[in-house]
Image 1 (cartoon, rainbow, N blue to C red):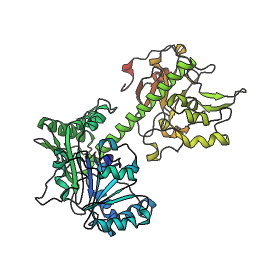
Image 2: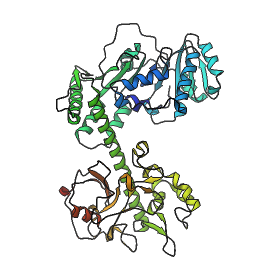
Image 3: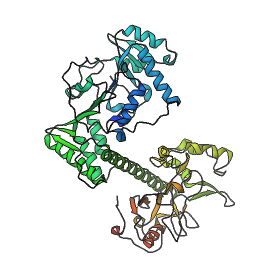
Length: 503
């Protein structure tokens, strides 16, 4: 069985590691046979007991709501109404418990391949009710002995219906928590480990703590609205791995805590890690730090790809792209970002531009909304800090910067300060974002060169150097040093120890 993903991995995996389990001795419901040897993540909800609104409201009140990041949907929005209506239709059809069954390879897959296993006392009646529902006319439905399978296509239904033996021992152990009304169980498959090991984190304590996730064998989290808290635990192959994970996470909790007292968030008992103090503040602070770290890694990677594309352009044209494409009269038409499109795998989009027209001509302006993801800083759209079609990846412009110097486009040979000492591109503050096709970049203020570089509340910014390296530059950097790093021929050589957090 191979079912494509719902974004429940990011919704649940982050916090499934943290909660202690005290399971009551009671009879568990039999697992549907479709939860088989291929299954690696199982999410369930007893929708006959609790509706969508009740479950979501309860999730927001749990101690892990900072990691859950449950959306604050207004009850009169279309998304809310559709979710509530769908769950109610399943309940009206006699549904009891709904299972999502996912595999590692499905996590970044096609949402149309997601399938449900719906437990029903009378599967044929449930299937008939679902088939008669106008909202489900395009779905594929199949009753089984005690369930109904619901998918978005016949191909997905065939994959969901196939059974490949019993679930793994690890998943079976994690699924002992399914007496609760809502929950998730997962096993740490080899693919997960590869993702964690290859994540572009740095070497700070936060990155090391998250890398220790790789040692988890299985994890689970569950609960029953509205009076119980989430509970769960993570299992490790060796006691020392559990102890190491707890130590690292406790150290992080203490580094983020603002209470001035020692926080012991987790405790390790043999091969298991459990939450000792269910206060939500250290978890919220850790979640915020993890999000910042992830966004920083993604933005570093985007800058790295842009710098590589600039070098590929140089290999073909024997120069970096000009800051602006101009016409015969010198009128500035389009940004270097447009010229870079063929080197970013965006050849078809590049062909759509009228290169003899300005960025805001009727034809070219319509392409503003097609900004490639590579030009979008991680988190910008979600936080609403930058308008759609605008980018923070800019070139610093001075009379002697790589893209600011008048005359022919810069060549590597013309960077006499050395490519490792010269900033090529940077991630500017949200307030400095520009339309990505417009030939605008960051004009550096000689009196205050940090202006436009530092986002509000931030003490550093990312820069791509002309040698392709990505560095984090501190707000404490000496102003003359920063000016020197922007020039391509000022004759300055800036030692690495005068910078900050080099990568």
